[in-house]
Length: 328
Image 1 (cartoon, rainbow, N blue to C red):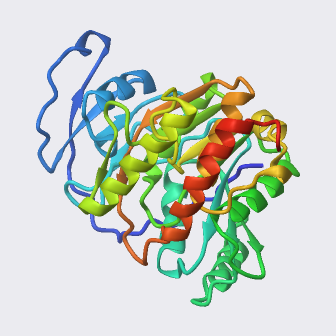
Image 2: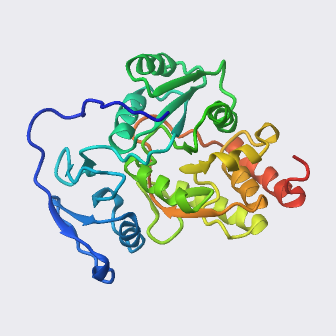
C-alpha cells in the first residue's frame, strides 16, 4: 500500500556539494566524535551503529546509513552543512502510513510531503480541521498529484487528539502495519523517519524522545523549555519515569497496539493526548522504546500550545493515575 512515487527534488540541476565521509565500523564504536565540517558526514553500515553515534551526540542529519532498506549508496546535500538526502528513499517493504494533522499549515505542507518522500516509502494522510488559510485545498491538490497522499477533511477544529484519532481510525480501516504520527511544521525531522521504522522491528511503540541521551531541543526559548520539562516531570510523578518523553508527538505504532487501545474512549483533546496513548500502551503491556531526536522549533506558523492544553493536562493526568484503563 505504501508506494511513494518519485517526487522531483527541491533543488535544480547544479551539482550538489561534495561530501567527505568518515566511515565508521563496528571496531570504531568507541572512537571519539569529530567536530564535522560543513562538507563532512559519517557513513555507517547499519542502523545500530548510527544509533550508537546519535546517543553519543552525533547529528542524525549528518549520518549516511547504508542498509538493506536503502540499496542506493549515494547521498547528497542541497547546500554544505544541510541534512543528507539519500539517492532513493528507504523501503522497508511494509505498508506504512504517516498521519499529519494540520491547521493553518499551508506554508509547510507541500515541502514536508516532498521531504518525507525523499527519506521513506510510505503513504501520507493529511487530517485537516478546515484551515482558514487553505491548507485543506492544498492537501487536495497534492492528493491529486501524488497517489500516496490522502486527505481527511474535518468540519472544524476540535483539538490535536481528535484529529489524530480520525487519522488512526482511517488507517486501521486499511491494511497498514505501521502508523506514524508527526507534526506538519518540520519540528520532527523527516530524515529520522527511517530510524523510527527500523526501531519498530523490536517495539510496539517507538517514541522520538528529547529527553534520552542524544536527544534535545533546538531554537526553544526559556519559557518553552520550562513548560516542556515541567510537563514531563508532572506526568512522571503520577505515571512513573519508565517513559522519559511522555508528551513527545513523533511516534510509530504497530497496528496491533492501536487496535487494542479502544480509541473511541480516549478522553484527551489537546497535547495530553500523547500522554494518554502512551499510558494506555503501558497499561496494555506494550514494548515501548524511546529513540533520541532533536526537536526543532517550527519553521513557519505559530505554536498551538496554549493554556487550555496545560489545564487539561493538570486534570487528566491524575485521572489516568487513579483510574487507569478501568474508566475508559
